[in-house]
Image 1 (cartoon, rainbow, N blue to C red):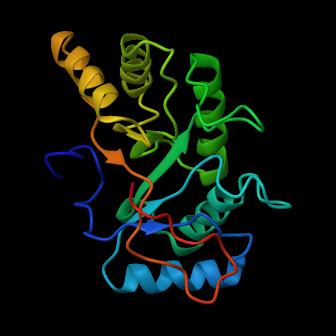
Image 2 (cartoon, helix red, strand yellow):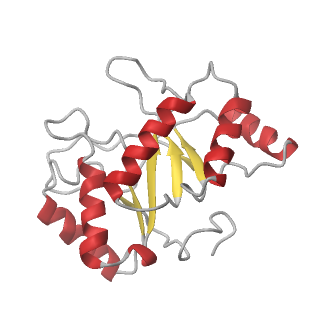
Length: 202
């Protein structure tokens, strides 16, 4: 449907809806209302993550579960692009994720179950793990994509040199490249929500 996300069910809208606090600080009812308004305004791209709100009581998986319920109740899966993330740091493990195959498989499996979808349109690696070679990471992502469980992959919070190295490896080995990068910055803030402040651009 688009040059950078060709396997998506629809062409992506210009504005992507974030969902960090869906099902926690933003109630399920309010979350549904936000997604309804977003879709009514022409939006079709919702972004979530396996690790969203894990620091809040009852937060583990809440965003994905809320989005999955909305997709089912509204019957709009074939009209929405769904992105989620895996590889978030565990507990006090620091700023770097665990991008081993078992951990990514675990995160992806949980996300598919919570969202109740057969495939993720765009799967992000939530953090980098600089000690892990990009060759291993790209081979893993390409293999998972080949299995049909994800349609495209990208990275979040990676340094430019690692992105360039990953795409250079993909090109040299005839693998799909990283489709996108998600930096820790947003133009929007949820009004009236007792949430973390917006992250300033680096």
